Length: 221
Ligand code: SF4
Image 1: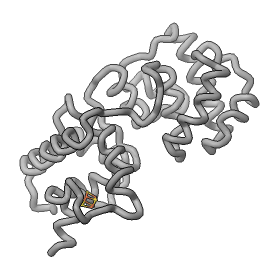
Image 2: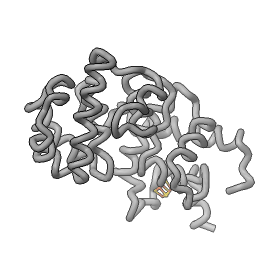
Image 3: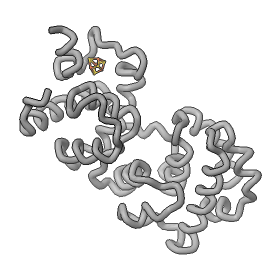
Image 4: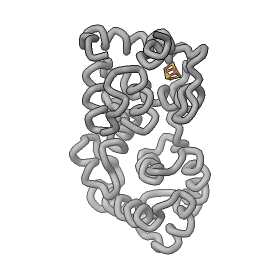
């Protein structure tokens, strides 16, 4: 794996991206945020250590009760905690989505900023959520190094499988992938992780990325 040049890795990743585009013509964010940047910020925060499917269910009630940032900014903490409890870490998450909503209203007039530095100032927002927002809302180059991305790109052989540091993964993949493809690639890799390359039982036999996958090649030696 370590012998592969950066150029060869870039070319291999481009072939993988093209294959994923073929498999998943639509690149869809797993969080159903209806195009509303504030909702994506909230849902991104709730998705920490929680499945996207559960976040989508919980947010139906949350957004019915508090349909915009102003509403959530003034919501009683206990009510928000009650609603988002199924997402886990509900106390901290409730505090941070209320605080982030307040900041969005008071300091940005409800308009989400479009820079990494400013997004990182919001409560509960780390690079993963900031990249999700930059990629989806502002169509900027953005690698969302979530659990699927980290696991699968490690198995594919773009870095050692033992590497789990999201920031290092983000930097590696940012360098290897075409900027304009990054955001959609990350959405597709999540879909692929659910359908084929799951954490516990990857379906390597017949995998459409098998010919580009280092783990697959090593296991066939
Ligand atoms: S061959 Fe296996 S490990 Fe490699 S991408 Fe496909 S499912 Fe994942």
